[in-house]
Length: 349
Image 1: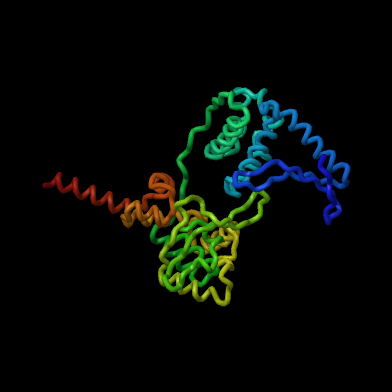
Image 2: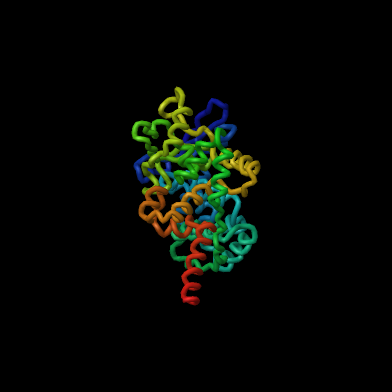
């Protein structure tokens, strides 16, 4: 039986060894209680419980299975993904969570999904269903999941027109968020990439930025910097325009190489951007919509997809085109006029 050890806080903790992750790192599960006896009892109950259900994984409740699945992926998936799964487990499908896997059926699952769809977007429901499906494949593979999901709605992406871009550039000039706004708008960087950037990632001699890490929230809702980007193609080196490079030189001062270039967390960036937008009479776009605007500008300038994809760090041209490229209304008007002129010429020729 595992022995509890007293913590500096006065509480007692038992750590149970649960095996090694795919990298070979040892993993432990902690049980903390006010007394030594209580901590050891909780650990013992856990051991006995899982010894019983290990005979048949489908005897686990859905909540137990979800927790076990999340734990098994904690060192594989990104911290933000694990955080999202943890939030889903605590807030969604609560009517199903106490039910054992071998007691679930498609009718119960469909009812639960229908209920969640009343307050969540189709995209969120698909992500939730994806987690449920993965858990069932892992611990109850004989179950045939058959759920009708809500129809996808076209994403209501927002972006700025050229005259609005000019207004925003004027509005942020000299402001503390001018650098992050330019990185999002001019360079197409994600907010997680911007806040994860260190001074050592900027080469002032060559005028480049090396993007290879991101700042995200972990399962405990804490901001952490991970030394990997969203996907393999997101790790990239970007040319920095002279105007932005001068701003960075001035901002650096005596900062250490590993100090953050932008010491502002993602949610604060959004709030400060909203203040600027409101004062300038611009629509209340998200910070990520600066990246959308960058993609639309590249499309309007007829930048070949291969270069736009590399610059933005998208996983594929299809993702870039489906999600991020929008039609600038000024460009659309120009195209309309060209088509109209062509046909009008034929009619009067």
